[in-house]
Length: 402
Ligand code: GCO
Ligand code: MG
Image 1 (cartoon, rainbow, N blue to C red):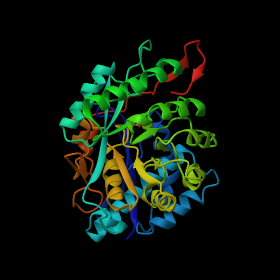
Image 2: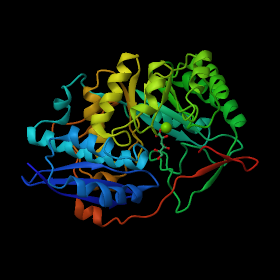
Image 3: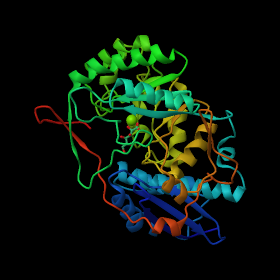
Image 4: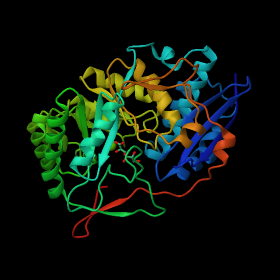
């Protein structure tokens, strides 16, 4: 079997998605998600101009060798653009291979380790009262785990709080919107939110929170400590993870579980955090960390150190990524939880999929491959629209992490 063509499909059914479709001489095709929020066309160009020409004529079943060719064979390794492109190829090849085997992808990975994939939803509100109600809305839908994000008094906007309650979309402007941030205001507010949440819903639902890389280690330590009584499932991205020594300081001060890694591209980004047991959940994804081939290596390393998986699953990861992630989650012995931000109706129509939500769990379905396809005619009706993530400034104008 040979790869005869590969094409990049860019579509914007409410938000931009980049999809790689790899076809073979035997009439089968595989799909991989190649979406990098706010940098979509950079990945599309990397695929079109540099990767696809190298794929034509290769045996699609040699997914490992193709991965090594694109990673090890490339002098300029790693980085989000390159690794997203490699992920797209790898996901498409695993999809193809499972279709050739006529099996759902999780079977090729080692089979089912669990019945369903526990997911968490993203509840948000402009203030504590609204966020508490929104968490209730998710619990009513059957969710066992909910991430709670609330507006902060005195700040016009913050990460996680959108115009629409159920669909959170941060890339909402042609040029980056400028937000204003105050760590002091945030740190005073968040414990009050979780106090109210536990008061209203008790201790059974899993509650999560995303600090979105905005704190210093000592601030994160303080937040983790102040949330201990509310028993979070995890505190996500407490600090920007470039300087990973910061996690040691957080760890020395709090037993609130820590999750990090949605922006990681390779095992090298999380190797030390995992081996030193500085985190509890690794959030790397099929989409941005080298596809199924590489994410498996990360999960296997993590398993040795009691670290579980908690893959990123925001709306900017397409249903193709979600499908592949759910097969991965169904297999991974050290699976922890999967993020699930719902896609819009238009997105779901462009990407018909086999996965289904029921009572707080997602199920990947039994279709051969990862079970997600693309309706190309419909996709063509939604042309690309430039959209950027916001940036953050402190109240005095200093640039900060968004
Ligand atoms: C999450 C994330 C996202 C990111 C987004 C950036 O945990 O879901 O932090 O909301 O901000 O994916 O593209
Ligand atoms: Mg996050």
